[in-house]
Amino acid sequence: MKGSLRNGSLWNGCLWLAWRQQRVLVSVGAAVLVAVAAIAAYSRSGMLDDLGSGLFDHCDAGPIHCTRPDTGVPLLLDIEPLQYLGALNIALPVIIGVFWGAPLLGRDRELGTHRMVLTQGVSRGQWFASRFALAAATTVALSGLLAGVFAWWWRPAADRSYGLFWYETTALSGSGPRAVAAALFGLAAGTLLGLLARRVLEAMALTLLVTGAMMLVLEWTHRMRLLVPPHSYISAGGVPKAPMGEKWSAGHYGLITASGRRDDVMNCPFPSGAQLNECMDRHGYVARFYEANPAGDYWTFQWIDTAVLGGLALLLTALTVLLLRRRV
Image 1 (cartoon, rainbow, N blue to C red):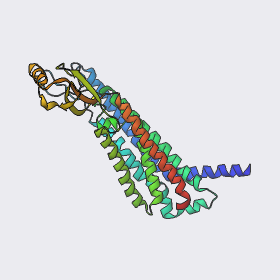
Image 2: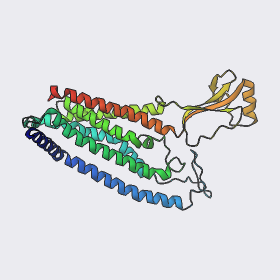
Image 3: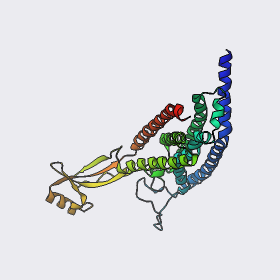
Image 4: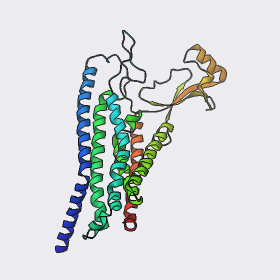
């Protein structure tokens, strides 16, 4: 009984020390969240007022910009602050990794203060778990709430010509469960590099490089459609193609022969009408096609990114635990 009480006291002491060391970062995160929520509430209210004014009632959904009937000037909602929030969510893994993950273990190791803690009967596992648990819980709460604020703010303007489409970078990578998994990846990467590097500044620089590179690689896979291939949309003969609407075009358009061969659209560069039909008959084309990702693929992108980033976060955390005995 005494042993369990002592262990409980040690664990509570570890948590208290972790809170003392991280309370400034937790407070900064809370302040950022409150500020973002206030800005979102104000801007979203203005957005709803604009939509309720009737100014956008004649606008159709789709990629073609809506214009004023009288002047032809493009009609757009003020979504710039929303895009800034999306950019913040995309940068959050780097920020958390550099300023929270890298010093989490690295600061104690550099200063040698962990030795004093470990001499008090605290195990390496307790020392790590108390710090990482608080940081991870705060990271999940902060990133999840920021992603939730983005989704709430975005909903009235989602996938509209005057708003923000699902495939734009700030929406696709700055929202949903992907944002939470990315933030955890940043924390895990920073923590591991803080354990491996000799100096905290060195760990912070390495974390900036690693997390930044990972975010860029994922953006590249989005643009190249490597993980979520586009769908093919085919229209027979010269029949008008299905409207693009909310789809994310892959930029691939063309013509199909009776044998199924696909050729470049410039072989018959006519939008429609008799010229198009004549050209298609002359070259033996029986259909046209384009490739795009439908709006439902938003969640496919989200869950694939979440699995990749979440899996890497778990792997890096497990590696940190395995290396604790050698590095501490």
